[in-house]
Every structure is written in structure tokens, then in C-alpha cells.
Length: 84
Image (cartoon, rainbow, N blue to C red):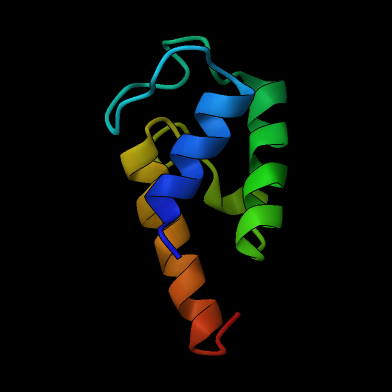
């Protein structure tokens, strides 16, 4: 499963009318704020079948598609390996 494609799909279809680049800051573009971040995470968890605990979410790890992708790819790989 291509995590970046899922992220771009979720962000572009749900939160922005314009295309979102891998390094565009989702907060600076106004795509994400505290409420939409929660909604965004719920959408990602459903699409990828993973859980993203609050402790894993910070401005540094959740501001661009590239950074979010790194975090979620690790989670997807751990799930595939049976490590949760």
C-alpha cells in the first residue's frame, strides 16, 4: 500500500481544493488545524488499518505529507511484521 498516495488522497479530497505537494506545510496552508488533524488521523487510520496514538503526533512529524508518510510507513511495516 502506498502511504503517500493515501495521504495525498485524504488531504486533497477532504481538506484542500488545490494539489498538495510532499513538502507543503499542511498547517501553514490552512489545511490542518487541531480539529482537522484529528479528523485527518481518523481517516488515515481507517484507510490504512493502523492506530496513530497521540504521543506520535507533533508539529514536526505531522506537518507535511513527507513527514506523515515516514511515521505511517513505519506503523504499516510494524503491523505487517506483527509488531502492532
